[in-house]
Length: 350
Ligand SMILES: Cc1cc2nc3c(=O)[nH]c(=O)nc-3n(C[C@H](O)[C@H](O)[C@H](O)COP(=O)(O)O)c2cc1C
Image 1 (tube, protein in one colour):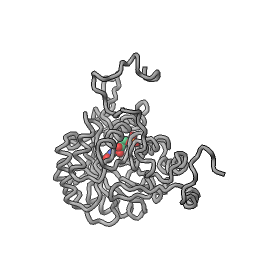
Image 2 (image 1 turned 90 degrees about the horizontal axis):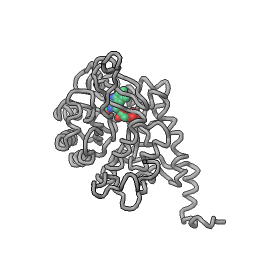
Image 3 (image 1 turned 90 degrees about the vertical axis):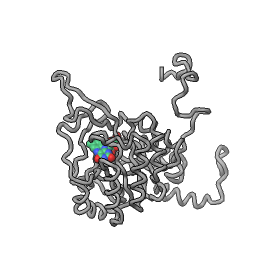
Image 4 (image 1 turned 45 degrees about the vertical axis):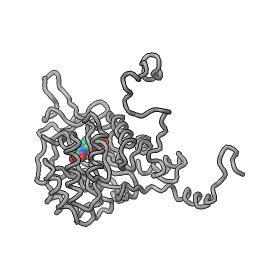
């Protein structure tokens, strides 16, 4: 007997029931990049996968993004390189890595054998270096996509390519021309207008954007009157930055027609669902893996029930379904039109 408050079953309700028994479809597509599920692990927080393989069944992941590689080996920054903060982590690793050739020879074959899609994160000091790296990786077996780290705050000139729209467009266009692989541009939140940078990435030919890298921050030991990080400033990650990341996903989703991978402070299944609803087609788990190396698969285990709770048959059906209040843009209101904070702000915001 149909419930009076629910619509009558659709003609293909039988198939719907079969789908319900199987669970929701977790696969997602970001342009040409198709992933078995939307839970990836973020660059720099999961080593090269090898370090975590004893704890996590890597084959289950939507994707593994190993530590960013550069053209040549880098020693990274002086210690301390990580400091825990309230609700977050500050790091200034400085892209410590063995360089592209060591990665291709020693890490990539092992990673590819693991069975999860491999998204290779790369960074150069110039657009030309990005292009050279992309050309080197093009055609190597087992790479699902490239992620361009034009947003690392911990190397000199590290964020320049990600803070200037034209520089961003040029580097993405150069990489686009050098590879057939899908290209994700990983953007920094340390800009005035993330939409302008995302548009530039789209104009350069990116298949999608990863939002966001860390926010610049600092920690101080006031008794010694010294900064705690050897590099003085570093990148803030973890739950503290989730609202910023959600805002970036929301704004880019509304203004730019590009698939989005959400990253920033994801610890729980509620966090994952918030990013999907805001408009991310997939997410990356970063700092959470330091607190619990199994965080990514724990979130994957919880995903089908959360998707089903929304009555959706697939993750794709959840993406970008945020319902906004009438006339809300999600962008800062012009000063003249701003509501009076005293008379009109909701009680919790006062
Ligand atoms: C210790 C550490 C190292 C990181 N290294 C990289 C890196 O090599 N490349 C990169 O693109 N992002 C790097 N990130 C940024 C993360 O991939 C992610 O964008 C950021 O931490 C926000 O996500 P989270 O709050 O879930 O950690 C690093 C983050 C941390 C905490």
